[in-house]
Image (tube, rainbow, N blue to C red):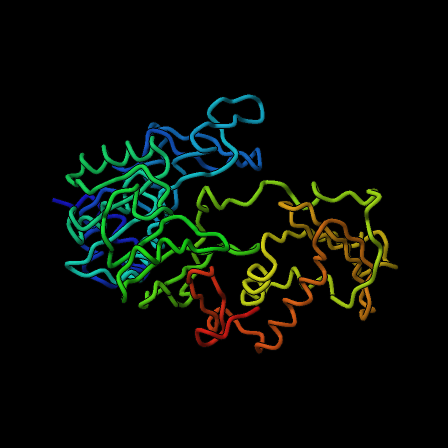
Length: 396
């Protein structure tokens, strides 16, 4: 008899994603389609910014289940915002998904869980990843937490139907001990949701020394990266950035939905006119190492670049660059010209954003312009710290 996950497992082995037999066996035996709800959501190509529902009768749905695709299983925290013409089940914001299988496998292999290990999973979703953990390590080895009670209920039902019975708790995964229950410590922690800016220190506290924490981590304007931390004595963890991992963010850490330009008011009486030596274009420089440093040192920064119109050849190369931190209402405008050296700016709000950006640029330059391969993260009681080359060389 063909194993239920054979098509997906074959797709992942053919592209070289699966190298560990433990997880290969789990992929073969767990049917991903059984963990999909009646409705999934996909981008509405004719209405950008909207997600349209797709039911079980759609011929594409079964194909998606057995391919290397992430599938959205909840929008707008379970209360669909509606479509452009009032369609009731359409959504705007992805709030839960069944992750892309190749990324699931990458994270499981990075976790390096072994027989006898206890694993805490943050973000049960509908239970597919949880089922893989149970298959590989046994039900008793797995505790999973899910902040959304409807998803948690669906996960328990899906897992039971597949023959698994781990402990699934309706919890945000940040408190300690888990849900107020004395669970003891774990050997491994896997988050299927991204920590933004700060990795919760409570996650580190829930692991034994030598334990491994694998989580997506997001800062700034770049998609998330995959972070693998190893816990030391004293509730400190150090680790490296080991891959790309675009994930939805913990609900408690979501950035505001306010855009850059919604914050800007150039006619406000408090606006300051000034100049800066900071090249406004650096905020858009697409070096991943720089973007990680910028996002870490200038939290919640957003930017929008308006290039000079092609109808004005005398302004060729010029641009208006707006930056903002919507949470505190700070914004700034920098007028870039190819002549360089000094740039006209306007700013308002409690933060001098061009000064902060310039400082971050100098930090990155002094560190030797490190790329992602040289960067690492430490999480301790004082917060989350980005370092270059070795722990302790915090970028600040």
